[in-house]
Length: 463
Image 1 (cartoon, rainbow, N blue to C red):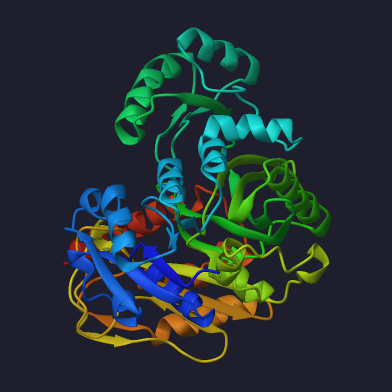
Image 2: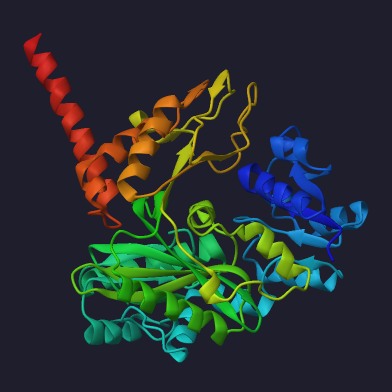
């Protein structure tokens, strides 16, 4: 049984875990940087403990400081949230060696599934389809060119230790591959301390679909899929559950493959398997696994009624899965809009500031995950996510309509956000039809920019 849980994260996910822990009778302690000392997560926790200055490298990424704090507050378990050290096998291993429970999978599983090339090979062994490409990391140009001869162009060059859309380049031909490969290796080494890269066929109009799973080390279940195709610079912006692209036979096959891979590695905890779906052929391909809770987990909770964070904590306490696959149903439709402190009118330039006036939307089917409050000053040191607006309704069309109403109610004064961008998106005809792929949003933004510039030019001519 976990009595005192140390939450090593910040923002809305730290608050999310605080709430789940307290609902299970655990004492929630938030490990925070000096910049986050007055955060809502710290205010709502049973206790807060400072682990260092604002710089993440000296606080949220400082394993030694975190373990010292865990010892000082008498914690018996650690929840890493997402980001920071959540997918660090070294951190998971250090927590266990310190005699604490790590709320997540074993270090060996994080190591296996967090390494993109290794995860790809593991999927092949489990009989799960992967995007045609190199079976493992490529060592040099000759090996890369041999893969290209077999797979064809264009190719994605991906960092084996990458994540979050980072460390990815596109090679359209052999000349581009010669140029991009060493640059990709250098970028991977700089960003991740690991210069290994692997190659995949580039599916130009692919959809990004992921499957949520829970496992207890022996058995796994899925909680259906999420569509995450609306992305900017390979960072998710808007997600929905379920995907409008899948028919039921494809959905069943996709989700079944995720369970097969999770059980193949004896997966423990909450995890997400990410796939590319080719609309033109109906094929799906595994690309990577996230061995942690996802930012977009609330839409799965809204549609299935399962509290994923509480289930993570129950599993960490030694309980077995409480559900069979037959217990997991799906009701209605949910969307999540990531509201960031960025100004879309200025190229999404970060805009941290102080909350001067805040009105959250409310009503049936509305959920807000956020650490904002009146007077709160956004620290400029971290990710720009300030809120997640989650909307549920009985159908996709009604969920999008409700999302528009919720965005109309949302008021935040003090700094710019992406809420207005989401308001335009939910009314877009293509989004309404579900006609999306991973490049849609960037094309849409370019179109909006071109339209704005054209209107400005017309006004100038008229003057």
